[in-house]
Image (cartoon, rainbow, N blue to C red):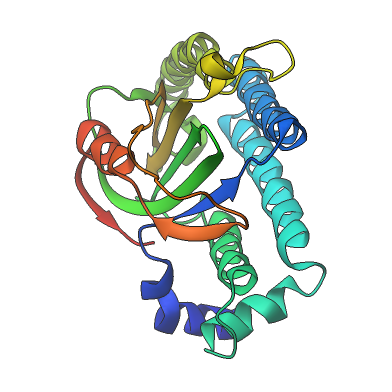
Length: 271
């Protein structure tokens, strides 16, 4: 892990402000994309239920979400590079290979490792944009520092409060945190359909209706306070001119820049 971290420091500029672009050559590829997005939406539904459960600490909702993301990244890594994805990513960062498989393995593995630190490293914002275009889709992951705008839902975790409180104060704090988590659960329930609307079923939706769509999901923690944004995001129809035959890394698009400006303040990119 330490050896990998040192390599990331030297190779981070290769991955900074980039997105993965994946071709959608046929309906079968669209089905697979749709199914993956439905799993993300289902995870959002599950998170809202966990947040709304008064008998569960907020950490359980986040551990469940983190486990889902770990599995997703590990699946992607194995799809892209096979079981030896770590060696392939390392070779890419060491300059021993420069193909798209090495680039994507390094990108996904960097995100995978940073997710391990997500709930122990304070003041780090996780930023995800997924956008559908007629012949491809992009996945843009970033880890940022900064502040959230007023668009974010804010909720508290009593487990993360470091204060010497008496029994009455602890009860009041717990009640206040439960209320804020209930509001966050409502927000997720209302907004998670933006994922389903962004990537409709190709078997029941015409191509004209499904060729553009997208969403942004941003989460972060500062001390005991958590922030979350889940919103529909419109792709730029003029972003790509050329067709794509294999996955590749591309610069983050104007959609990501606009989302950062709208939903964050003083944002600085870690990756």
